[in-house]
Length: 137
Image 1 (cartoon, rainbow, N blue to C red):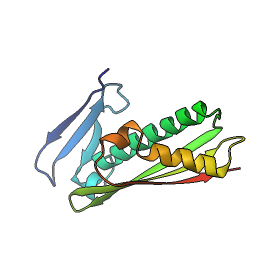
Image 2: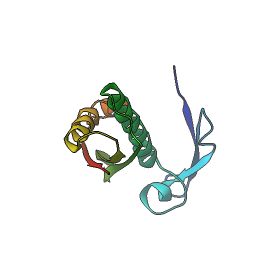
Image 3: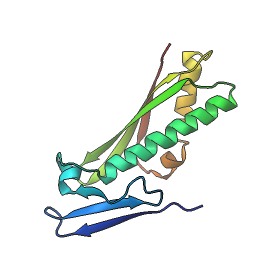
């Protein structure tokens, strides 16, 4: 299986603009630019997309491990915060809140810590990854 995405760019770095598209067409000529990356422009940026990919992968991996342990989540909500310092991505922090019937808080946190470094996106990143978990009642 291969998944693809493409980027198009016109102009110089600061005044130029581009678009991103994905094979699934979920992104279809979605705008990105210097302003959307380093200021408050409308559009997306690579770090935001990395955060979305990491949050999605991590959450699905949590669901898988919960299932293997005999639990089914009512809901799992993850936020991935990608830290950009200068021109370097220096870390990702994953925050997850979950409603999981019949699981202890300790077991939920244990599963989250196990997946923190083990989901597919975590495995390809060579930066510090941290996480926190909150079990909702």
